View 1 (cartoon, chains in turn green, red):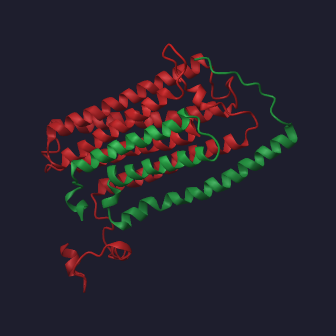
View 2: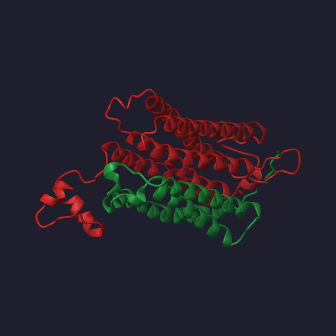
View 3: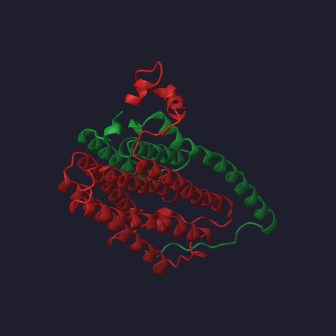
Length: 115
Length: 230
């Protein structure tokens, strides 16, 4: 396994991933710049986010070349966060409903940023 | 490898799912990586949970508030004389951090090639880009606090939770970047002055520092997506 002698890989692969991260970051900025709204906004944001995160972990952090036991030990536990997200999204919706019901709709008048 | 051969009936280290059972059931060191690297991964795992808690609580307060959420696209717009360009500073910060991740990956590679000079300069470049990132963040904070009147408890543009989430999440990330800059500088100096050469010429410490640095970039990917773009 590569990790026994250290992680040594051709420089070309790093340069390609580097370029790819630039391009995908540019796309994710474009989501905002081009004012993409509706269901496509979160979809595109999440796709670009996971592509970037995946390549950083797999190539830059060398996870691709580690043994499966280390991959599972490190990347398995964060799956528990999905449960927390699910619970807190439900709880958040419930709190919002209660606030509207008991305190009424917001009367906040937002100002525009100055720049 | 030699231990693998000695295990009854197994002549090569099995990979895949079979490899998991093999690694965990041998009654010896599970992960065939330097201990520092395993510990860094475990530290990063714990850090993942910290940042996840911040981002999940941000999600929770954003869902539960009845006040309108300030539009990050407008709040973080910057004008260079003309019309404000949405989110431009954040985009530049993102590119700076990705660039620094690239130089760090190259530094790790050069470290394993025992090219001390290149490793040193690539790590210095990474640290400089990191410092540049923190500088831009300081500028962003100043602008938000002084010009826009954003406070952790209120802001004129919408829900009060915007400020508390923003300062907590980006503040903690900025702290990680600052710590990373110091960490990289220490390792870079030691690469240069031959500290690791005297200890058997082992440069996996560069990879371990690199893991931390890439993680900081990784966290930014999530902050950028959820806080600035969403």
